[in-house]
Image 1: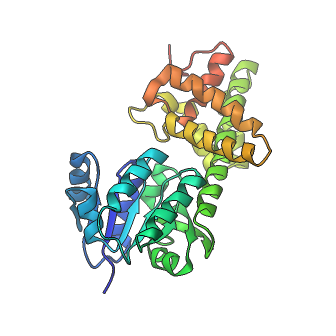
Image 2: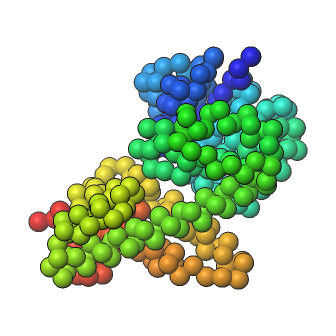
Length: 306
């Protein structure tokens, strides 16, 4: 019999991942979903169908064989896991798709295994639009038999490709995820600097964007579009919230510092993210680094301001 799946946490990424589990996961039973804001879970369930809303984390965990969660930060992950482990989870597979410190991942694995369950770390690379389109890159790590139970819901369902660390410690997956996110930070900082330079020197951002489209299609072009359109500061809900971006930066700097190194590009980007937070508050987005660079160049934070 096919396993019963549950999903906890319906942020920007989680909603798209749930949609694809229902549409492409060949689920024989409705997906069980739970969110702290019940209305959000009810609205998603009505939209995607073949799902049901659980009254609590414990209710979802008790009924599921494989329990996924994707949450914003380490405290949220650990508090959710604490609720999961209050029920009998023996024989279940618990899957964390969040971006957390590898030490948190190791702690999760230990707590889960003490209760007789299996743990798989499965952080994902990609923006919310990629989650919605089922185009994420899934990074899987944990005991091979447990990872094998999760793979059918990754490539071809929630994602377009897997990075498979089967048989390795779960923390390996989040180590890659945290370090991988520093590439995104550096990319946005470089794009921001380029856009500001193009405006200040008279080249023009449209002309720079043509170069970016030809040379760097994909994420570079997508973020360049967000900068030109003003999307980086006009959204009601950020695509990649500034607080989460700074959390990832802190994790990366901590990891490398403990290994005896420094991440100067990340330190620079985090300084700009601090300015984003000061100007935009919780609505601040990682792409707001462009606004911070503009302020540094005596330009207004928003490029659409008259």
